Image (cartoon, rainbow, N blue to C red):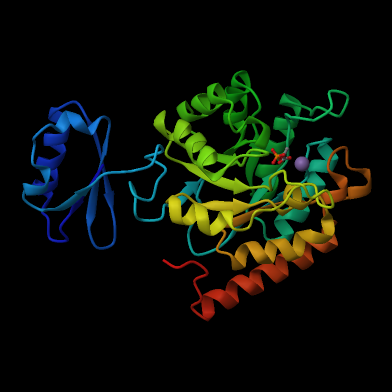
Length: 343
Ligand code: PEP
Ligand code: MN
């Protein structure tokens, strides 16, 4: 349930509402909008019994939340959230770009990729140190050694780090090195892992499961937020359909859908979404035009030699070209006052 306060409600009015909610053992969370404040109520609202919250001073109305996910929902938090990740704002005016190789393969490869990522204008360097591979015989990642290279690249090029955490035991070491924890598609419904990152103090990028519905995805985010971590970012990375030409079917409609259902930011991964480097530029532009808050793109200094996901990794040249096109499109939308979404 959310309690919408009048625009002229006083601090005392809000305090009285919070106290009333807490007096029956429910939790309250105040959210500030541009016009008015909203008090979110968590827990079994029948505990409020006959308490007439709507009649309290300063209250405009109380609204029940119909969804199984609450903290994630826009009903609970009507204003879009901007998530601060080590000083970079995701969900604000500018799209945020994360670029880098699928996997950290060596110190040289990673530092080279980081230099290119920074030169092209990305704010984040991506690179998996723990790799969830489909085949047990494929390269599994450098693990802690890979984290050290990511750390070095961050200090050398001033980039933030996003990297995947694949198991509960790895949450601590990865949180020590990463600015943003990535939960991969294969782990979207690994509820123990979701709870563990929910207890960590690092923001989380939650990728959509291989065949997850939007409802399942939103509930997965609720697992993280219910543990106290309010910094969650969705990442659409394509879903399994009958189409085999592309690796996955990139569901661009997930962008406006998530924006409508949730206050959290959403970024798009055109690399896993298509599996084809030729599609990265057009799908990146489409994502920005659809209202995405950013992109995560696989780029490799030499894709032909990549130990994983070479066919969907763009070359440095193609990366620079894509970045120029993205920033021109973003500037055009901003200058023309075009908001791709209906809010
Ligand atoms: C990745 O980002 O390299 C990755 C493994 O992605 P996904 O979980 O979307 O398959
Ligand atoms: Mn990959």
